[in-house]
Image 1: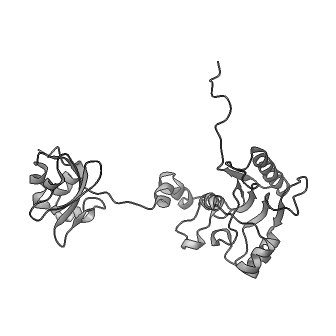
Image 2 (image 1 turned 30 degrees about the horizontal axis):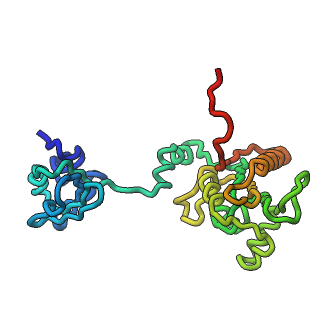
Image 3 (image 1 turned 60 degrees about the vertical axis):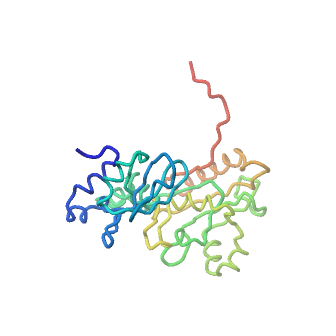
Length: 278
């Protein structure tokens, strides 16, 4: 009968043959075959001094947990100790971006028969701006994928029909890119000081050039429209009026360009009534 103090995967690993464990991505995680030792997670009660022993090394943690290194042949006996409540093998951690893309079914959509890439559509974002020098928002030839960038926080040349900020065209952004960081940012001084807008746009539409294609976003061949909302006020983010104008601007641009658009909004609030409708 399997030891009930030992988690199922660890029980399974000890029951499996070496060949079965070698083929699995999970069963040998935590096991060092060269010295035949396991690193395991132990939930315990009682004094820390009772955790160790001959050939057993313990690192007590807060909350009644410990990381214990011991020979596989000692695991059953160790679980019989009165202060040991449970033993669990470690699990492998993954980079969040890859795990999230797999869980969201993005990878099969991009790699499927139709190979959806976002080509021909627009992706718009209303956020804290964008690092337009970032490789993920540039084409192979170095030019920008950003067709319009409206920075509401910079006084100067607002888009037609609006009264605040400065609008930059793809041509102006491309010229800034060609000049390099120092001179280019003088020509197009828009910055993403928090990095939030750059991050969410990367998830939505980054082409992965900075990571060799590993961390590309969803619509990685789309063209981009960016609105940086006005400067944050004291103790707050920009206002809903600026968000509304930003969305309005994106919709007007997509109508003018006669192209479909997906808009990402990663700002929110919980104001207003929360009472259910009768």
